Image (cartoon, rainbow, N blue to C red; front, side, top):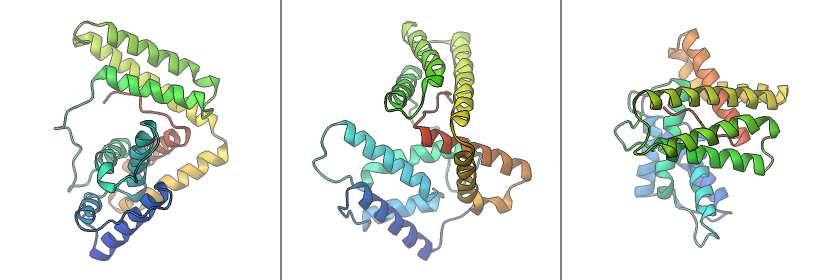
Length: 235
């Protein structure tokens, strides 16, 4: 997957501009000059539009949490979140763009801080009614894992850390199982079609096995998004 042609880049930037306008309650923030270069870079990396939209959503939601907005959100403010969501999408689908790499060289979030964010999103999802009481078990297990990570002086090390990370992977799998079960059959089918449409540009060079893995990962990501669920696994 290479960089998009010029007309494709212009369409990409226009779609981002339109989406950001909607998120800013109709206030237009033009994607021109340095902002155009920034968003063009996302297109060159192969960031799907829906992934970029999810990153913008994350930035706007965080801005709202700080209190009443005083000015519109600019696209430059969304850069880190867009690339973070793109990293998550690449890990979920297994798709790698030769022009883009997962940013392993950048500072990682600590295990306790990652757990704090996951627990906050889970409890928010429960409080807002996005998920039901069937998610109490996973929420309790995440809370217990956070307590364990906080209690270790200097942080968990060695086998204790490996054991906790393995448990988090199991909790994450249980969370996805509960999430899929919470959706109606028609909803899950619709998310599967959406995932296939998002992955369609990449299918030509994929083996059937790679396609199945990518589709499953993309569906899981959309399921999380539908129910406002975090990734609990620490990778």
